Length: 487
Ligand SMILES: Cc1cc2nc3c(=O)[nH]c(=O)nc-3n(C[C@H](O)[C@H](O)[C@H](O)COP(=O)(O)OP(=O)(O)OC[C@H]3O[C@@H](n4cnc5c(N)ncnc54)[C@H](O)[C@@H]3O)c2cc1C
Ligand code: SF4
Ligand code: SF4
Image (tube, rainbow, N blue to C red; front, side):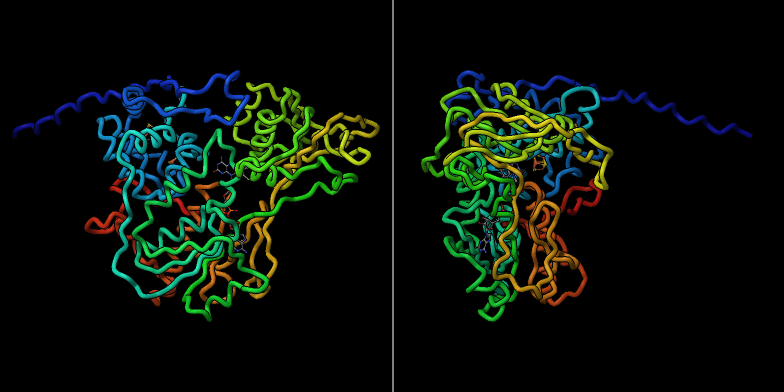
């Protein structure tokens, strides 16, 4: 009897080495950048982009892709950048991301939070490598529609969700009309200051939809005299409502109507349009989110003084703003006053102060956030000549039929309660999102549902979208990817 041969020893597996240090992203110095609206971050050079991309260990399970609300195949564009194939990287980027020029500048990069390299150091600069792929590769591509479906879809609202739905449905061969109440598309992205992104970025992304059957109708408000559900009687077979949160919330304290009290949304929009905004020399901004960050940093650039203070009722750890923005504001010299809550606004004909009271943080509420508790007798007055209010946004639902039975999310945008964001009126869907890429992710989900609805499918998925560049087959994530997340 012969003994069976022992199995050959497996070669030792050497885990890939993680380089924890990110290649420096070029940025304007604090002194230069905080006096005007010049762009703060600059693109990588070709050499630096390749160096940074080579830090990616090309994980077998791409945590980064799984964390992205639109399942952007960032692992693949990083691989192509590392191989010096910037044209290929641009195409991969644009294959599932029609707002890539905007997102490569303002996405909150959920992918980077999940990147394995973060366990040892600074995650791969995934968002910045997206920018490198577009700026160093050929990004002047045009999306291609598949065979016309001869069915029309109306999209109400030209923000990120409406834009994404128009793209998703356009590449599938639907004729799409987008109705936007403002003169410019982009929704709340039109309020993001020019030191982060500009309208030219939105226009560049839009130009790639030039060959799709998408009609953009601006300066047209759907609502009171033009109800969205009536569009179904006007030759549209489905309607997608993506009206987001175009109105500001008010502070609701005495003095909130005084001249010199400005809603942050209006102020930021005006600045971007080049319209005059009256900012004094002593500015207070109330709020702790991204809008407040954009308001303090924009005020600093407009105020003609360095006296800009942010007042927030919770602590630093509770601030919902992007940490990158908080660091940027701190570096530029913004003063932060935490745990102070507005009581009333003072002034005789014009704002001259904000009365605040101190706050102690109580036990966490249902959402896990520590609830603010006022400290008795702690009132004080902070002098100011401009007060900017950034305490949230809400949707303008005037003219939207109650029969739609829309749900208002905690951050204010309306959405349908049914599967695929279907509303209670058949053929009408509604969605939005808490950031640009989340709004896009929910629009993809709604577009899938609209496609299924118009294809006569009930509850069954329609299958993957066609390749948006008209290449054979449908677009599929490569093997090894888990189910893309849906928001
Ligand atoms: C100052 C600021 C900075 C931000 N910074 C970032 C950032 O850096 N990164 C990020 O990811 N997110 C950021 N956000 C959040 C992001 O902009 C939003 O989450 C995103 O735009 C939501 O997209 P949406 O399409 O759901 O809605 P919206 O962007 O609100 O778009 C809705 C659109 O519908 C239009 N509309 C409304 N009602 C009607 C009507 N009746 N008829 C026709 N049109 C209508 C509106 O004019 C608007 O254009 C920021 C938001 C603000 C305010
Ligand atoms: S879109 Fe945003 S979350 Fe997705 S890969 Fe790009 S930077 Fe990351
Ligand atoms: S998780 Fe990080 S290291 Fe892994 S593939 Fe994605 S970017 Fe590369």
